[in-house]
Length: 252
Image (cartoon, rainbow, N blue to C red; front, side, top):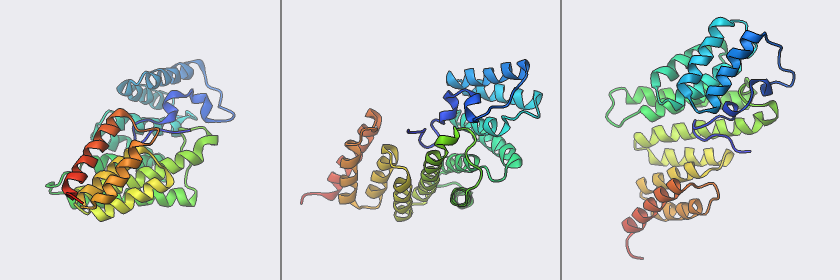
């Protein structure tokens, strides 16, 4: 089973909340209705509506047994609205509830990495922030920290592999902005070791081009183009990187 890549989707968004636990707690009709509003918005891809519905549950049913799942879903929904302020707000709420929440740290690392620009005055601070968040998440994964709440228990180990891959990728993205392409390549590879996917392969291809490793870029592009999960958009991007590497390499 494949989960969302790089914060694009979490399996939980398409599952009934009752599926998160082998023996889901009984809830009253009003809480059940509020939870259904969360599920309906999540399944429709209405991320702002999902956040509103989650807020409604947390504010009106403060003792809800689904709080860990709802907070992880909120982190994912906030990320997919591409709103750094929302992500930061839900990150603080999630970590306050559970300092060992892995999902929150990975998504915060991803959002921070995505916002870094080469000429930012706070670039160094944000790169360090990504590194700290990602490494803490990796430490928690290795030490058996709080399992991701927003997935069924039977799928938690595989989802942890995805989270580890996303953590390494966030650090690689930050290194790329800092033009530390060798570091980025190393981190992309570590991410691919635990969770292979075409999107990260595409980014690895570009990192090779940026680092003037044109033969590696071409070889990685060929592997990516042959991957079953490579979308047309990924293939177009990778082909462009391969063409650039071939041009920069010059004649044999």
